[in-house]
Image 1 (cartoon, rainbow, N blue to C red):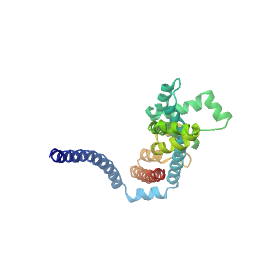
Image 2 (cartoon, rainbow, N blue to C red):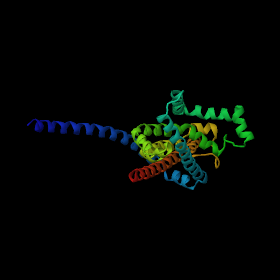
Image 3 (cartoon, rainbow, N blue to C red):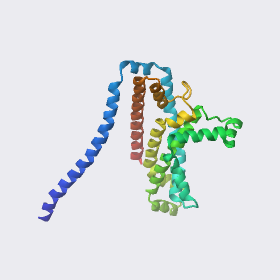
Image 4 (cartoon, rainbow, N blue to C red):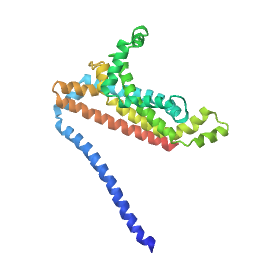
Length: 275
C-alpha cells in the first residue's frame, strides 16, 4: 500500500525534473539556432557567390583546417604525458605547475599574441631561434600553429588529467603485480580507460584553435594567400564594409565546425565502443 502511494509521487517528480532539464536545453539550443538562422537570412546570393569564387577565402579555409588539426595533434601529444604525470605523481612545485598549465586559458587573447610577438622579436632567446636557427614564427604559417597551441593546449591537458584522475589506480596496481611494467600498465589500462576524456579534450582544443582570432592577428597578421585564416577573413571583410560576405564566411566556419565536430565525436564513439 505504501509503495503504491509513493510510486506516483516519485514518477511525477521525475517528470518535472526531466522537463526542467529539457527546458534549459531547449532555451540554450534554440538561442544558438536563432542566431545562426538570423545570420543565414541576412546573407544574399551575391555574398555566397563571392565566398565560393574567392581563391583567397578558399586558401583561408584550407589554412584554418590544416593548422587547427596539426595544433590538436600536438596538443594531444603533450596532453597525455602531462595529464598522466599531474594525475599520478606528487613532486615539489606541483601546485605551481598545475596553475601554469591552466594559465593560457585565462590569458586575454590579445595578451597571448602580444607575448609571443615580444618573445620572438625582442628577447635574446627568441631572436636566436628565429635568426640563428632559422625557425621563423612571426608573420609565418608556423606561427599560426604555435599561437593556436599556446592558447588551446591547456584544454587538452586539463581534460586528459581529469580523465586519468577518474581511472581507478587499483587497476594499474593489479597490472603491476601481475608483471606489467609502468609503461605496460599505462598503455594497456590507463590510456584505454581515459581515452574518451582525451578525445573530448582534443575536440575542445580543435574548436578553440579553429576559431582563434585575436592572437593570430597580432602575431602572424592576416596576409592574403599567406597567413590569412577564416577568422581573420571575417574581420577583414567586416572592416571594409562587406558585412554580407563576412557573415557568409562566418556561416562557412559554422558549417565546417559542425561537420568536423560531428565526425570527431562519431570516430571517438566508435573507438570507445571497440574498447
